[in-house]
Length: 432
Image (cartoon, rainbow, N blue to C red; front, side, top):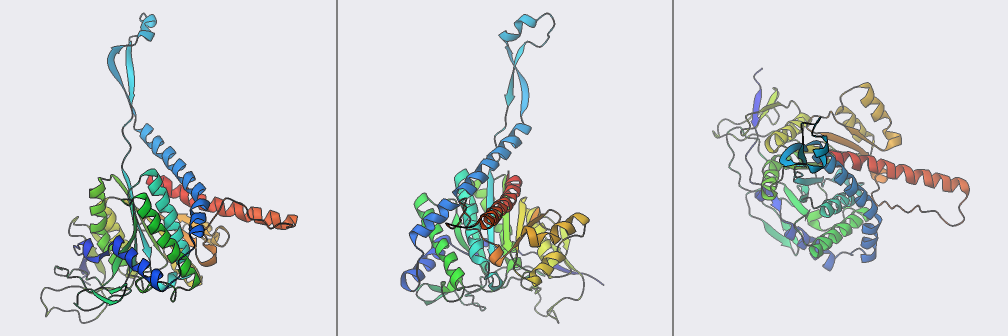
């Protein structure tokens, strides 16, 4: 059977991106008029509680980066005689001073993408806080970064322009895209920008406070206590990856980055989207889904990728993104129930080591895999109540607690910190 070819469209990322300024104007408008903002002291406590983790990541990053620089160091002669070697001229032919050259470190960058889908409701508040910790780390070491959420909430599915439907609430129209023949078409969605490294300290702290308030609101009730434009919807993951081809390329060029790490944090498969554009309007598809094998084609690199189902289409798009922009890709897969666990298991290549790691998830709550198509590293993290990023280095024990309770609390505290550091260590190693 002749395969069906799907071409990855050339998309202008600006058409599918909501600016950071507009995003935070919507959030602030809601909480100023309808919602309840978090207490400033709670936000301050969050930053203070996670400072040690951020400092730990910074230390590990600098160590790894310096080690990488030293591995590329070179030793050369200067042409200047070393007077300290003159006494050995009778048996030493090399009397010249040597110098060790350490090349400058590479410019690093990070782009994070958060899944703003309804199935993330049990974990979204913790996921937001985790992204804030990563942002604090990037800010402290001077790594350029951007944080986006991908969503198809508050979308219009016709050609109408963007419109305000109520104060602070906007509905987004379908951007005009100049598709070529057999391009995969995008369903309407947006990347909403929440943080980036260009913000000064005051604006960055204000944006962080807005995100913290959003996380607290999601924790209370994910439908009734958040701005309309922030409500959870479905999973336009494939659309986000397509737009990231242009977005990350622009970010990499703007900051003149040599090393970029993209982080995709989601809890499931992308929405189904297999529609293609045809230049000849008479040559339309008779069925929504293709029964033949599919091949994704990147027009820029000329590379082809097999994609026989929805999940393989996502993997193909991730591989295309990596080939187009040359970056490291990390996936955080949040699992909160048995169905998610089965979905996670299907992604993992069977090896005795992988099987052992996966079966231990009930105890370890997280695992790292390095042989997942499309990703350099793929982390499985137990979601829901098991995902708690509001960690503190202080061991909380009630006054008068018995010895057994104290021992249990200490073990749990140590295990949580160790698990978190394993994930952060792996991420830092990849970035450095």
